[in-house]
Image (cartoon, rainbow, N blue to C red; front, side, top):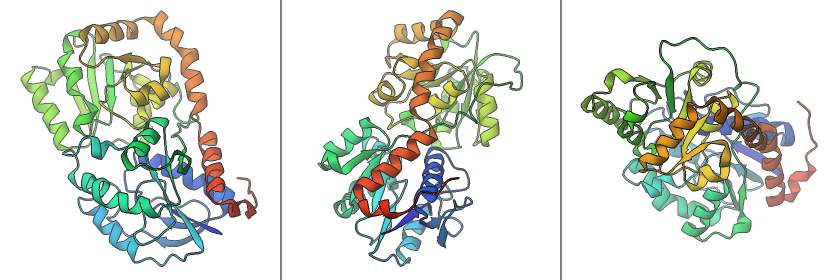
Length: 361
């Protein structure tokens, strides 16, 4: 049995899905010597059987997903191959493949990304009917998948996200004139950044707010709201930033704030913790599962809960007490553990993959 790894959705500016895809691609290349459908990034070790053309990666353009589906349909994938995709972007017309569903946010918030909603609502259920298995990144999303599509739990495998602590780590960062709170990934309304603005009286006298997000309609909405609330001078917006610059932002911030209405996992809180910074996050299922007591979890809409979280962030003693818990959480989500769980899951689905000899990097 030959494994084919579909990395075609990797775009120019990889975010969470891109980082996960890179971990998976590297792990599988060393374990199974797969054939690779390469994206725009440098492919992992393996035989590249196709390379995605320009303009079909995640975030490349409004029509990228349609162009990607059309291009993938043109590929000839034999029935003797097992196709695995680290994202939900399946290869049309291929039966028995495995995809990774990171969350069901397009179904929970259908007006945010209409094309994604239509894909999840109408096309993805058809794909799932012929999938050999479904992978996902958390028990939270596994439960969502079971409840939404009635897929038996034994066909759903949890392979969590990971953070590279060798890269995201405490260290020196450029100094700032005023302490700031950091937000990473304010792309759509479910990220709930407006709630931070509504509680500005709890932080604006001491902190600025730095928001990293592409120029989406939601970011423009936030800028208008900040102006109406006379907070424009307190907020700095950054577009997509390279990985090195993102690490510097983590290292220099006073805390990361992540008040999402829903998540399937949530990588930025772990990246911030790996850089030694406290995290304020919403008290939702995925955050309870992944972050637990390592973060200050707030009840959304509750000023007293927010006030307590900001008070804790200001307390050196409280933050010091979090360090051991943060280390325990980070130890669960390493690239090595993700790689091991991914390879084990694939062998569970297809025992013939055991025949491939292990390779050492």
